[in-house]
Length: 401
Image 1 (spheres, rainbow, N blue to C red):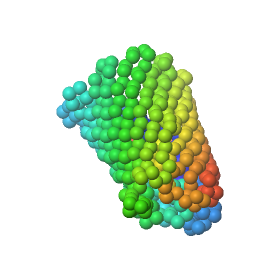
Image 2 (spheres, rainbow, N blue to C red):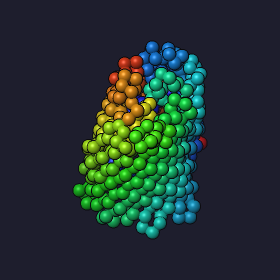
Image 3 (tube, one colour):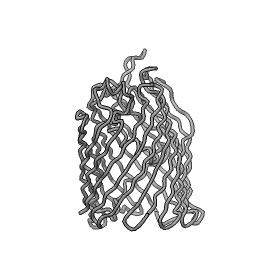
Image 4 (cartoon, helix red, strand yellow):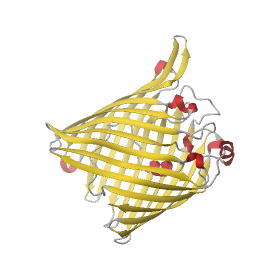
């Protein structure tokens, strides 16, 4: 469903391949172990494209989506270890565009334990859903994307001055649409960091990572014979984290990166990536956060291998009363897409996404809550038919057990 990923994802700082991956970690015990949620959302543009593209896809522009889901946050101590399972299992039902009806699954499970002086987490995740229509070209509408990830993360000597950490992860991404078999990819990533805890001055870290991404179903005919597409990504840099004041936190990193495509097919990338987030607790009721990032990541867009995205975001949340909370978030992201198979004028090579989202939540009882949300998204793409704008408004109910 369009807008769900755009609004939520754009408002969160995207992971930068140039920095160590964040460990899966054990879910918070503050969240109820099981809850059920039902939401209904009206979209003025549910197609992720212009009206002409929507017509070619056989889709109605506006739509209402009903989305029941089961949310899990299970944590169980076992001796000196902890096992966990969190995420959601749901289904999207479209009132007008039934072809988009699809299960929506995102779960993560694993175990956390202390090995010698290292806090270690082994985890796996599984996600399955209808692709965001903004990711798909006109020749594809019905596509189920699946992503499986296995990861191992460890942080050692957490109470000391020098804190080493490392992580490895393997990701597999597949698509059901024949047109998007060439976008299926496998990615292997490894990262390491050495942090120095300087007390009140903050934590300084040296960070480095390597990733290998392959597109096994995308072939190029070269003088040496058919070759599959792929690239290697190398990066290294520094990260800084500090509670500057009791109510002000800063986290920032800068890395140098080199992306090398296989057989020099398509443009590589050499440059700086970065991310920074500043969080201010202005009062017991109000919190602000602002941030920016520049990141490289594998691309879902047809014939594209990777993207370089620059993002800016900000938000504020306010506790009106013990039962009522309000929040508003806005984001801006410009992305450039690269790949040896890109076709000028047909494939998107650059786009700008702007979005704003607001919500008002009401706690009816300790286990029952309701939320009203509204948002607006605008996309400007170099292929005009894929530029669009749309608003949404929705209501959700949640019951915890």
